[in-house]
Image 1 (cartoon, helix red, strand yellow):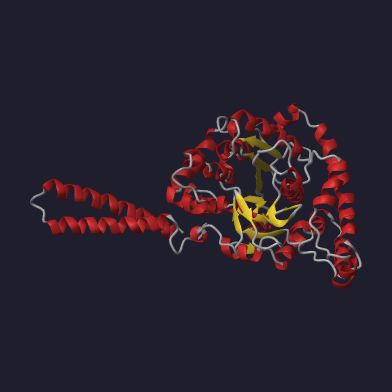
Image 2 (cartoon, rainbow, N blue to C red):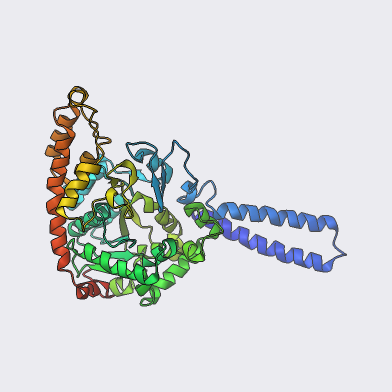
Length: 462
C-alpha cells in the first residue's frame, strides 16, 4: 500500500507540473504549436485517470482492493453498515463474506493459540464460530504474550429507546475480552451518525445515547477500565481526537468513500465525512488522557461484520497517521425471530426480544414468531427430523446456552426427530427470561451520575 501512496503522490505532482506547463504554453500561444498543446492535454488526462485508479485502491490495494461495494444480485448476500440481506433462509454465507472482505477465518489453530496465551478456554461465541473472522488477531496474541498491552474499542449507534438481544452480543463478548486480557476499553456512541442517517432530532440522538449507555453499563463494565463517549459531546472536549479525525479525512478521497460506502452526490456532506469519526478511536493518540504520549498502543475491535468497511478504510490509512492498523474480531448477525435472512431490527417490535420486554412478552414472541425448522406434521418431523440451520430457537440457543454438551444433545435429538420445535422454544424461554430479568434489575441501579462517570475523560487503569 505504501507503494500505491507513493505512486499517487507522484501522479498528483505530475498533474500539478503538467497543469502549470500547460497554462504557460497556453499563455505563450500562438507561439506554441497545436500539437504541443494537445500532447500536454492528453498526458495530463492520462495522469488524472491513473490517480483516480490509485485513489480508489487500484487492482493492488492492500485493504481497499475488496471495496467493490456494489448492489448484490438476487442470488448474493448484501452486507454493508446500513443494510443486511441474506439470499438464503439459512442466513448469510460467511465463508463467501470472508473471501469478499479479505479477512481471515478464526480456525482451530487460532483458538488453541488463544487458550495457550491467555490460559482461558475460548468464549463459546468463539468456539461456535459466532465470532468467525478476524484481522491480525495473531499479532494481538503475540504482543500480549510478549507483555505488550493493547486496548479494546467497540461502539453503539443509538437509534432506539431500548436495545435488543442482538445489540448485546458484541458488548457481552467485549466485556469477556476485557476481563481475560485486563485491558482498557473505549466505547463510542455515534449519536452524530444517527443524526446524519436517521430522521431524528439532535436532542433525540443525545437522549438515546444516554439511555443506551445505561444498558451497556448494566452489563457490568468496570468504570476504572472503561471510557464511554458520545461523539456530539466528546468531539469538543478532546482536540487530539478531532485532529485525528481531520487527518483521516485528508487521507481518504471522495472516490474512496463512494466506493466503500456507496455514497452518491445526493448525500449530505455529514454522511461523507462521518467514516473518519468512527475510524479515529482506533488510534491511541485519540485518547491522550488514557495513553499519554504513546501513539502506538495496539487496538482490538470486536464488532459485527457489517462494520468492517469502516475499518478496512482505517487500516489502509493508519501508516499515514503514524499509527498501527487496528485488529478486528467479526461477529455474525443475530437473526430476526422470523428467520435468518435479515438481522434483527429495532424498528420492528416483533422481530426482536428487547431488553425492556416483560417475561410474558418474551414467551409470547418466541412461541408466536420464532421461525421453526420443524416439519409440517408430528409424524413427518419424527421421520425426517428438524433443521437447525433455519430453526431460530436453536440459533438463539447457540448464542446464549453456554453448555456445549447440552447444545450438542439438543441438536442431535432435534435433527433425529426425537425433539419437537416446542421443546426448543421452551428451552430458549427458560434461558432468556431470567437473563433479561437480571439485566433489567441491574439497569434500574444505573443512575445519570453513573453515566457521567463513564463519560468523563480520565486516566484508566493501564
